[in-house]
Amino acid sequence: MLNASMEAGWPSSSAVDTPARRVELQLGRRRHRRITGPAGLLLFICLFLPAVRGCNDTVYPLTMPMFWHPYLYGLVFAVATTSLTLRSVRYAVIALRILAWLTLIGGAILLVVAGALGIGELALGGILMAAIGRRGFSERRVALTAIAIGACSLLWFGLWAATPDALIGIYLSVLASGGMLAGGLVWLGELAMARPVPIVVPRALARERE
Image (cartoon, rainbow, N blue to C red; front, side, top):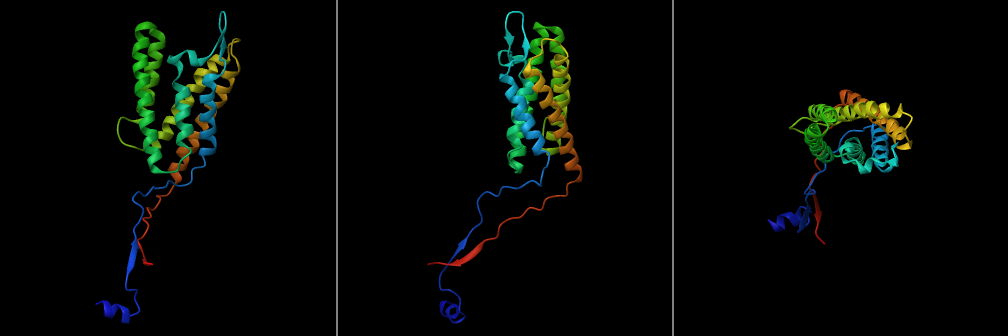
């Protein structure tokens, strides 16, 4: 057999380059990332900016954990839009699902301490949980969550912006929330028009061993 292969001009010894152990499945092009990513990052930065004038001092959102939800959602979307792989979608769904559960738990706690705020936060948690779902991993549900958090945050910060005590953090939060809403709508539209992305598995290549 060895002589036959040598006579045929084949290499006497060869090695095979196997495909990579892990193949990262890529998403299609997503133009919404130019909107959703910066909007989410800006919303997270607003966590550290002055929001409103208090009775004795300026109020920063960082000192009020019960109101962190929109800012943390902004961080998740800012990170999620940096990658174009299906794995990033899976991680984003897990993070958004955890935040939705935390919102529900926070609402239940606030319901005992401050009834009206608790009811509002429970309603928000229900909306966010319905958007992301309790199981499965869908990019469409991530886009729906971006729309939901953008709309709810725009309403929340918009009400604060109408007061005379609003500061730079509130105004920037309104801008970022509008960006999240717009980015989510663009995202959902892209998914509706997107074609399935073929899965390309790299081939094994044979090469002559040195």
